[in-house]
Amino acid sequence: MSTSGTPGARLAIYPGSFDPITNGHVDIIERGLRLFDRVVVAVLRNETKAPLFSAAERVQLIRDVFRDRPGLEVDTFEGLLVDYAASRGAAVIVKGLRSIADYEYESQMALMNRRLRPAIETMFLMPAEPYAYTSSRLIKEVCRLGGDIHGLVPPLVEDRLLRTFAAARDPLS
Ligand code: PNS
Image (cartoon, rainbow, N blue to C red; front, side, top):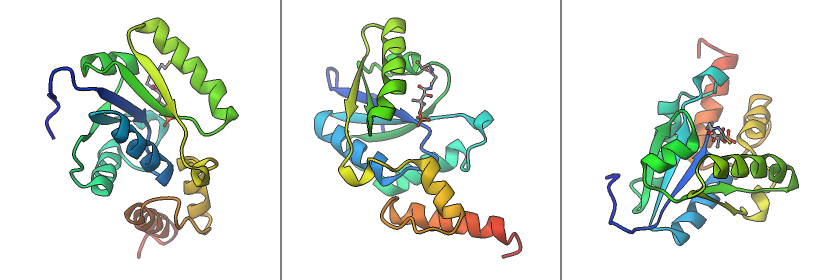
């Protein structure tokens, strides 16, 4: 999808690791698409944190979930988030806020980002209640240990996680 939008169109960046995308992320993206003309899902290239999926795989999973959805773009970034947002001409960073536990960390990041680039606002959106306690990290842990993750991630992500952990358990399968 083209990255050059209509001049003046409202653009938001939704950044994260997305390792992998969950239904909580999907919920925030859907809310963002209702508020902005364009939403860029920006996947952090954080290979040093040893993600389960490479940045390219994480991008592909998100693209597969949204299948050329109008107004949505998936990109990667590294370095400072606010520099990436500025390079894309975005004035808004969208973040999901699940709980008071998120608030501590997210407010620190939002205020640091504001200090770095005062023109860029961080906007917090709350996901639907069923996703208030889920995270990529917990979902991976539950799946790795054989627990049920149905309904917490899009079906194609569930399938991918099940195959990934099955292959890790039995590398010859
Ligand atoms: O999904 P995550 O891992 O919670 O996302 C965290 C993310 C990517 C939003 C955050 O780590 C980030 O913004 N990284 C880019 C580096 C940066 O700008 N650091 C300063 C933040 S104040």
